[in-house]
Amino acid sequence: MSIQEILESAGLPAQRGVYTGRDKPDAYYTFLRLLGTPAVNADDEEKERREMYGVTLFHKGDFEAQLDKTKEVLKAAGVYINSIDAESYETETGYWLVPITVEILKEE
Image 1 (cartoon, rainbow, N blue to C red):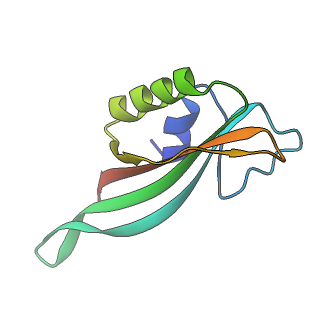
Image 2: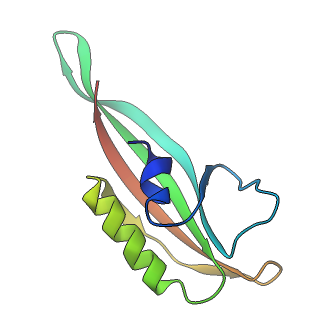
């Protein structure tokens, strides 16, 4: 399952980079790969890969319930949550931004 599919299972749309939908919803995710590196090598081959993503929850209004749902689906999918960083508010757009750093181990 891709990071996009995992995030969308929390009930919101997700898009890599910048959300480009015609009409932005009141809540959505964006994500970017921050790091991709071998996690386990054996017999000169990569057996597992570590991928780290920066995920941002954009939300107009109280985002706490959606953040809890996000953590729930990430953990259920075996995604490690490395950090939930300082939230910020965009006065021009009315969105709260909640940055989340996650890590996925993938077998090759």
